[in-house]
Image (cartoon, rainbow, N blue to C red; front, side, top):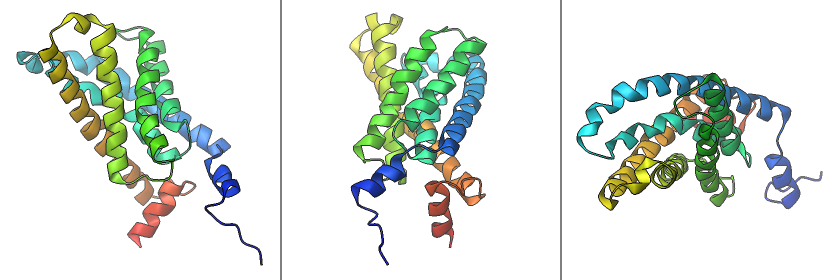
Length: 207
């Protein structure tokens, strides 16, 4: 009986091709994350007040807008998933209305790319915890770059920008990376991801 080598190019192509269920679930992740963004947009002001004692610490809250891409990438595990989910979430946030308007789409695009690049570097084949953390880091650094280059923060001194980058990186790793990976594992354990490799992998580890 002829078998297919999982490492062959044709097999890889099949694995990486998007299915209808991938598009649907990635869209659901994006829309649900966008709803979370709406609440985070409101909560950001009050939550950032205590952090104002040290300029740049407000970036610790940035992970609340970064997790969509990481979660989408960890669950869908296809090229473009992180970018797609983050951009959908940003679109929902912009359409409903927020204090940043449609510039939110630019941030969603670049932050999604920050996570997407990390998954691409691992050839969309490794979704261990450290990869999720690195994807969160990538999204956090992308956010810090935009915030310190294209907003009022651009004119502030290097010390502020250094603190901002470090805090954005920490927030990306912890909120976008760690919490998204934990959410993925939780959904897999609950059987919600049975049609995805993330769900099958979770069952193997639980066995």
